[in-house]
Image 1 (cartoon, each protein chain N blue to C red):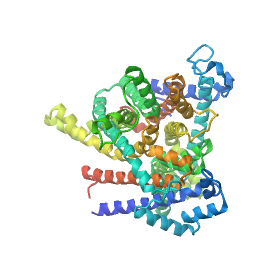
Image 2 (image 1 turned 30 degrees about the horizontal axis):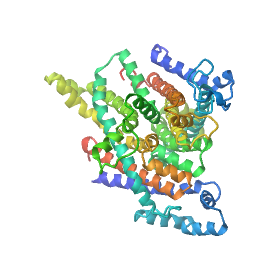
Image 3 (image 1 turned 60 degrees about the vertical axis):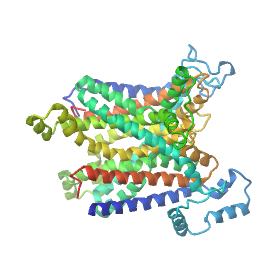
Image 4 (image 1 turned 135 degrees about the vertical axis):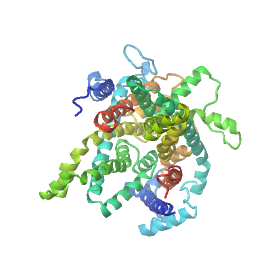
Length: 314
Length: 275
């Protein structure tokens, strides 16, 4: 309980910090933000500037602006899109599902394949094998996912020209088609984390296999398979679980890029559109929503970690 | 440092590849001495040939020449960003470790807050506000990597602060700044070397992603991500620009990452052997 309380306090501090940074982001705009925003679509007149400034609350002192904004955010009001005048939360709601589904599928691919691959890799040892594995995993880590996606599209157009690989089908409408359509982008997005996690599992397995409890188990006459999977793997999974949280940050950011390759109407399209028309409040809201999601996932992973690792248990 | 241990083939390979990449990026454009912006209507979207080794793009510009210039731009932006992050974040991490107590708590909490943002998203947010371009890209990456360097430096620095030589430096009346930068910092050289190399590799990928999204270096100046985005529009007609520009991103990031890995194996005695 004490642990939970201190974790919650940490979480609160970070969330406040995130909100302040996100709020201040709009101050980075060089010059008159309102004139720049208006300049994207209409003629700029002093009246229009004053009107938008008042609408965005920019005519008030900074601190009260922050609390007003925060109060809105906490009650689910992320502001109003400056061009469409639709609530920002609605715009995000309309675009968030493909991104989250893509990131989740990539996580399942990456994490799911990493465990067997890492275990398998732990069995391949020796100098030459180590070097090959190192080269292989580094290549997996550094293949740009958006390029991999484009190359897969190119390859598929040669092998199976009639295959439909672009776009998005909502999961609720046609679950199978939805999963099929996102399989390629999810794989492209997952490859770096697959490489990263497989390497992590391998080295954790090798560490665990060198521990005393493994030697004890072997001495007891426990079968090799049981030593490998029951004793070593369980302990090797602890660092694996901890890094899953960090991976979601990469996945959510990477999804925005991969979406562009596969013409998926997710947050990437929303945020790039918002940048093009200088819809700063929308950009701000997307950054906030995704970051809070990321922080939340990490918090859950932290708790999960405490649950599986007896050493952290209070 | 590892005088007794013979250099492994992997370390040689990683250093050699990095050297080739750097030479190609910084000498290549001079050696080829062709204009990356020169257009030619007659040779649009051609495949590799004797005159254009990697083919031409939709304006008849030479892909190889543009890739070399793009590599130089990517490496420059990433290097400026990573070294800025190292200077700022590294200093903050050292200061936090040295003074501990409240200084440490406040500084590292601030870093935690920045660290809470997904890398790509914070970078996009910053560029959205500053406007697209190479400069804003460098600033965005520097901000995103600052907390990473702060954390990387603080950990080992905490151990060093406790050590005898810091104690004796203090005893002879060395100033705080002198102890931090003259006594503690040099002992972190291997951490810095390894992490700078790894983060440079990661920065190359972030820079390429941003310019792929149209937020980085603006056309007509060549950048690898932008070339890939443009090449994608002509993928079925002539895939060469997309294939080679992406391959170039991969090679640069791969070389730097493998170098970081090899350096870590060589410099960190704890990790020597298995793995």
